[in-house]
Image (cartoon, rainbow, N blue to C red):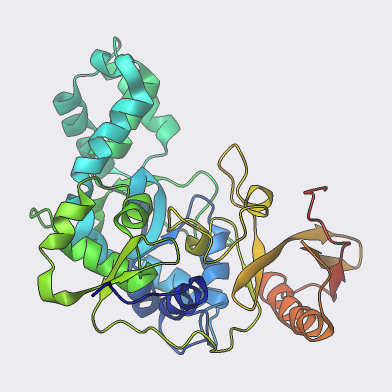
Length: 374
């Protein structure tokens, strides 16, 4: 018998449920992050927006306090990219990323990596960062003095990929971390060592719980790991197998939520680099191929966007003026009345979250922007 079929709409609803986007839930930031596994965090603000759109009653200070209490970390994680996740998950799962970070490092640094004495550099960097948190500019100055023959760019990458690091939060920063946040040695900062076992299957199980159902290619895209298919075989009875509309094999945790495809999906605003748009090789469960270049740019940026009926229906941005901040909604196509009203209400709430001190919170709708005009 062929595996059961999951339509694109069924996949949409299943992943929205995992991503807490079918209904806001009451949960502390640490608990929410552990359900989501992590949130991409190249910029400091988007994870705050991601939690606001997913959690009932979320306020920024809840996340900042958890980061200052060292329960949450902002650290290089999946694909070597900055993510926000719980300290428990970082310590448990960081070792599983080793096999993926090495080829990523060699690809990024190229032959200049040969100028770096990596064991000596790693030991020195951990010592410097255990003494005091430092920005990467400060680290590069120390590297140039101690390792004058090393290429500074390759050496910086070797530290970023090879040493468990966390960025240090600051209570006074508007979104928890300053633009040039200092890094600390993760184990010194957290007072605990990373677990040495490469918990690859634990990481894949958590990834499926956060973004499944998924193909092996989807999981490789999300985690940056190779040999995903082989590792999945070790999950055994925990998995169920499905197929999508194109006949591709999908896997999922047996007890994971897969709501009916006719479940209503409310309008939602997503910030830049939201995991929903980065977790799958095949992203058609959320965005049409024609619209994808309008959200994911050639230089790797992922624009802030919004969902209507669970699918990306346009982008949004803010504009500051004398009277306050406006949220500009740029749909791909004309919006029906109910969706427009819902977006206006949700957009005003988003503005009040981002700009609580502004006198005016204005939501404006631009003309449909299917051609990508700004």
